[in-house]
Each structure stands twice: as C-alpha cells, then as structure tokens.
Amino acid sequence: MLSLNALSGPNAFKCVVYTENHDKDDPSGGGGRLPDLIHPGQSDSWESKKRSTLAAAVVMTAPAIPMIFEGQEFLAWQPFPNGGPQPAQIDWTMATTFVGITRLYRNMIHLRRNWFNNTRGLQGANLHILPVFADNVLVYHRWDQGRAGDDVVVVCNFSNVGYPTTHFSDRNELKAEGWTGRWGYGMLWWAWDVPLYPGNIASGPWQGAFSAMGANGQYITAFPFWNLLVVHKVNIDQDESRKITEPTYMTILDMVLDAKCDKDCR
Image 1 (cartoon, helix red, strand yellow):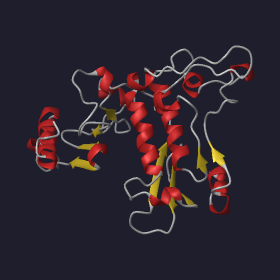
Image 2 (image 1 turned 90 degrees about the horizontal axis):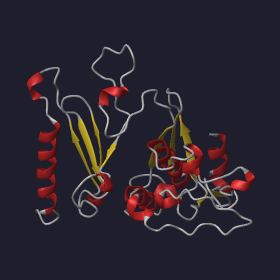
Image 3 (image 1 turned 90 degrees about the vertical axis):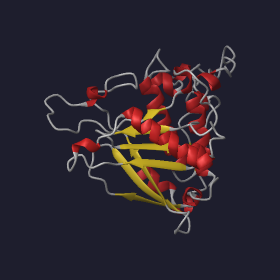
C-alpha cells in the first residue's frame, strides 16, 4: 500500500512499474519468468495463470508507467539469460494456445488507455487506498478529474483459498470443512476458455466472456465484446420454485444476445 501511495501524485509519471524485465527473468541471478516462479515446471497451471495475471492487473491499474516483458501477454515461461546462450525465441503459437490470457492483456491495455472512454482515471495521477475488512484484499480508487467516465475502483483479491478448484471440478470443493450453510463458494469466475471446448467462440459476443455462479439461479456474466454485463437474481427464500438451472440461464443469455445483435453475431 505504501508503494502504491508513493507512486501517486507528483511521482505518477516518473516511475515504471513491472513484474518482469530482462534482469529479473535471468535465471543466473535466481530470477525467472513469473509463471514458472509461481509453479516451477507447471507454468501453465491454474495458479500460474491466476497469480501472474493478478500481478499484471495491478501493474496496469496502478499509477506510474506500466511495462510488460516480451511474451508475458501469452504466459511465456522460457528463461531469458543475459549472458551465455542466446535466449529462446518467442513461441508465437502460445498466443493461440493461451488466447484467453492474450485477450486479458489486451483488455487491460484498453482499460489503461481509456479505450471506451469510461476508465479515464487510470490515466490520472491520483490514488486512494480504501479500507477493506478482509484478509489479503486490496481496494483502491483511481481518478484524474473525477465524475462519470473517470472514477475507477480496483479490487484485488490476494487471498489463498484453502480449497482450490478448476473449472472442471465440482463447485462444492470450495466449501470449507464443517460448513453446513447454503453458501460455500463465490470467489471463482469461470472463463470461456477457447482451447478447452469445441466450437469457435474466439470471435463474436462470447469473446473473452466470463461468469460467476451462485446458488439456484444467481448468475453474473460479463461480455467484454459488447461492453455488456448480465446479472440474474432470484429470491428462492420467498419461492423455491423460482430457482434457475444452468441450461435455462444459458437460454436466457442466448435471448439477451439475440436481442443485442439481432442474431447476426452468432
């Protein structure tokens, strides 16, 4: 927090922020690519993806001048020695293999550059750390002049969930031992990861989409392609028959997209 505060105000455009550069990625000095440092030998793991992109999100939303190192935008993990043998050439096929990571970086760059004229605050010099009563969660407010299209609030969850899961696993894995309540998860987002599923969703409205799901019909889905957020909420405490299954919710999403793009975007 102190480091972020030190980068704001008069110092906002005097410093460069990064998580990787040619010195830090040199294995001879104990360094390396961030995904490999997070999970050595399994740089494409769930942990490496989530933690390295979380770090990138802080870089792209903090004050100062952001810098990314070659290949970070598609999870490159090959070492980059400064002396001795030449560094391995960039494997450009990784940009397709990890297309979701590549799009994430593109979207973050769009946010930083105020591409859609609603995140101007990320180009400003101001930052204020907001109080949060949760472990390992950082929230900060960025702004330039303030008001609509300017103010940006960034929420970073650095907590280590004790019961990790992947999008292939039963969501009940996230429930802590001994938990008997209805709620037991909610920190995980499911991404529409193109290489893992059949069909071409690399373009059109599903490009870069991601969802979070609650119990019995609580859903939220973001469609960056359309700058669209769909939230579905039901009151099952009042009427349990109102619960909505995932296939039904997918039908609702299809109807929303049909209305948005007149069926030409399928």
